Image (cartoon, rainbow, N blue to C red):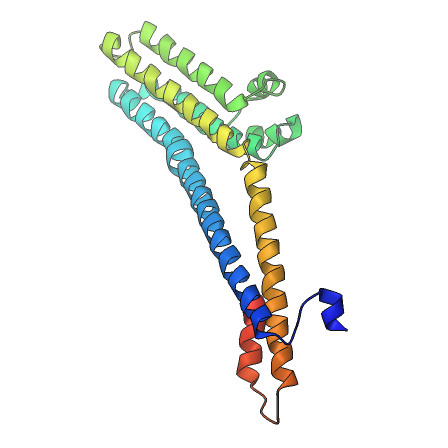
Length: 234
């Protein structure tokens, strides 16, 4: 009855060997596809951590380092704290956008934490790419400080500060490029189908081998063999 149901000669060693060969071949293809998938996922994670979020954090640190060296006086502290607050706000807004929490009630948390003013909330609540907009404000603040003579040698220093601002904005954009772009569906679909096909052939092959073992017990039951075949399936 089983022969008719599956169309296989379940008693034939040749059938088992053919299934074993098919399983080995498909497993090789699956291993290759899974290896590439895992490698790509790890690379994407590291790029987001190191080049995107890490790059943004590095730009914030370098920006405040340079400003602190050029503006060491107590009266300059308010301006530096404003720039630092806005920079950290842009970082927090990145996580808001990634989590799709861009409503006014979500942004109110930043106001309650003291990192955003109510006026800034009213401006940002209806605009797109909120973290990048904040860097426009930061650059405008830096230009205002340069016009007041707070930044020495502004012909050389100001372009460097602008480069840090544009780098930060670029890191934010690259972060969203990763989070908003999925792995190509045809690749994932192919990988899924190959895994399913491999599991089907592996289950049939292991089932035939376990069935053959029970059919030829003759009083000797090899539990280790059965367990090994079951683990092979899973």
